[in-house]
Length: 294
Image (tube, rainbow, N blue to C red):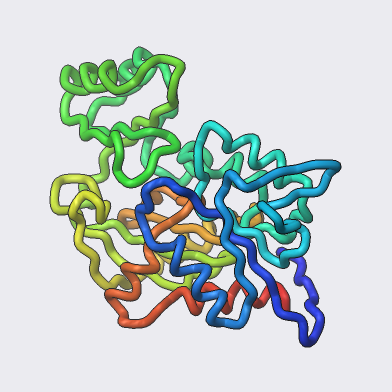
């Protein structure tokens, strides 16, 4: 469990958000800081590139990062400088971060969660992926290990087409890809659960408009969702893992009772929840995070 931090009675809690100049694929960059501001927090938003460290003092522009109660990088920013930013933030008080630095590093890729997923392999060599596919047969989905927003995701329906697709997509040694058994039930929809400090604040169903991409950016529709007892059991297990790894904000994606992935970088869903249920779930997010300081 994360240790609670006591705040002074009349002191305004302060939150520092790091955002990016990159194209924004959801509205977390505006929605989440605004929700904290409405709840009475003092909010500062800086670009990822504003981070500096000198004499073990970490700053975001003119602000000392240690002066904030909560530090929240929304997304990873430029991948080329991702490790540099983690190393700079490692000089901060760990409990101030929305998610632990170890988890940013170790739990972001899909490989971390494979024990809950369909039959899969993560590799960078095309020949290894092809050999695994041919050994096990069947239909597959090929996707980047650390990818998002349905980019570079391909459906493999037979070996010859699969081998050609893998060779075209995977440049050996440059990027790791995951080859994952295709789950036909995806056509009925993928359940997304939004978790804050290991607790679900909202859920909905993403229904693909093609055979396998349950992604809003690929035309998937959204529906209200219910959770079965079997799903609840798996979600409870994963939520426990999220808490153990000090992951403050995440999305769990499931098809039936099978985990597809866990997104901890900048999971979308708050906007979809508001469209479905006609209320702003970011208020629930702020409430859960504020419990850390009660």
